[in-house]
Each structure stands twice: as structure tokens, then as C-alpha cells.
Amino acid sequence: MNFEDEDSMENKLILVTNDDGYTAPGIRALIRMMRPLGEVIVAAPDKPQSGMAHSITVNNPLRYQKITEEENYKEYAINGTPVDCVKLAEKFLLPRKPDLLVSGINHGSNASINILYSGTMAAVLEGCMLNIPSIGFSFCDYSFHADFEQLDKWITKIAQVVLQNGLPKGVCLNINFPETSGKPIRGIRITHQGEGRWEEEFDHRIDPRQRDYFWIMGNFVSYDGQPGSDLHALENDYISIMPVQYDMTAYHAMESLMTIFHNNE
Image (cartoon, rainbow, N blue to C red):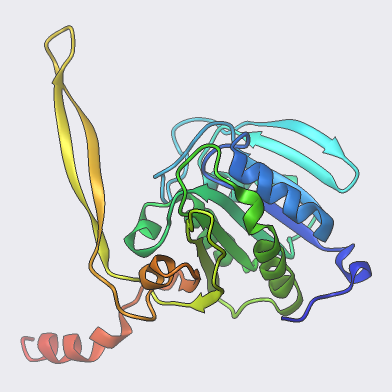
């Protein structure tokens, strides 16, 4: 990996956001890692917004509160979703288009199908749509007291590489770190999305007024143990770096669909 010298980093502008809220340990760790790399502006939800995917707020007004302002650092809490935070920051809170958007560090995996539910990665995709080099960081440790310091050198290096080289147009990164239970991380793998799904159950309950209500529960099941997938990398103590695009066209299916539908005109 090649890194820029300290002087060339001084003019970099970095937007930091997440879906666990601006007080979450993951984003506090990410802020600490980003501040030596340039000017940092934080625009994050004022409360947890996990599982919000790419939702935006349309029925309530959006408001922000300035939490902190220091030299080369500002922090805002916003009463909206992660995507709201990126949109509002880009239009009103940033002095210019940022050189990098980072989202996380998410408390838990965003590998496989989880990317579709993830507020962390929705913010990243929104940044990508705005032509901002964007990265989502997730750690496969759901503990509130997860040891984020072990990720410092990796996240710093990855951010520096993207600041120096950018990313292909229309592409962002979904980066997941394995929970190694104290063992060292073995390295980095460039991966594709593994096959898995949530097997959900609903806990059916009755409230004091005799009305039905439900709590959704479930377990994630991996169907992909093949080398090359994000799930395989994480299961073998590697960091998964998965390139993601917001163009959801299934190009491989277009030719067969043309044949099917043209034959039935």
C-alpha cells in the first residue's frame, strides 16, 4: 500500500457518519482514526438507526444540533436516518464535496444479505451516488464494549489508500472485520457477496389491553463456504473488502429475458 505524506493530507475533508448514533463506541473510534488524516466533519443520527436501510425522512422536519466545533473538526447530531445525514451534510453542513465518506464502525456484520438492511451501508451508497469515495466499516462483534483499537492500523491504511487513489466511479466499499477472539487478523481479501439469509421468527405477545403485538427475532444462516465470498473470508479471520455498486441491474439476465419476452409479444 502507498500512503500520502502528512502535508498532503492536511487539505483532505472527511465526512463521518453511522447508523448506531453519534455516541456509539464504533463511531467514536472511527472519528479518532480519521482526525489525523484531515479535516473531519461528523454528521450522524442522534439515536440508533440500525436496519433503516436506504430510508429517508419525508413526513417530519429534519433538524441538526452542533455538538462540537474545534480546529479541523465539527460534529453534528441529526434527527434522521443515515441517508438523511449524508444528504443534509452534503447540502448544508460541508464547505465543499468531501474527499472521503466513512460510515461505521458498525457493531455487527454487514456481510452477505445484511447489506440490504444496513443503515451503515445505505449512507455509503448515498455517498457513492453523490460521487464521493465512500467506505463502510463493520466489525463482527456485537458487544457494546468491542475492542475497536485492534482495527486502527487497518482502517487507517485503507482510508489513506482511498484518499490517495480514489475509487472507480459508481463503486463504494463494504468492509467487514472478523471477530477473532484475540487471534491476529490474517490479512485482507477482496470478496464477493456471500449467500446467506435470515431465518426469522416472530414472538407473538398480548399487551395489557389484549391487543396483539410482535417482536421479530431470527438467526443468520450462511449458505456460502466457498473461497472468494465475504462470509468465507470472515470465517477464516480475514478482512473482507467487497466492492459495491448502486446500479442494481442484473445484466447477466438481460439477454435471456429479451428472448423470453420477445417470443411472447
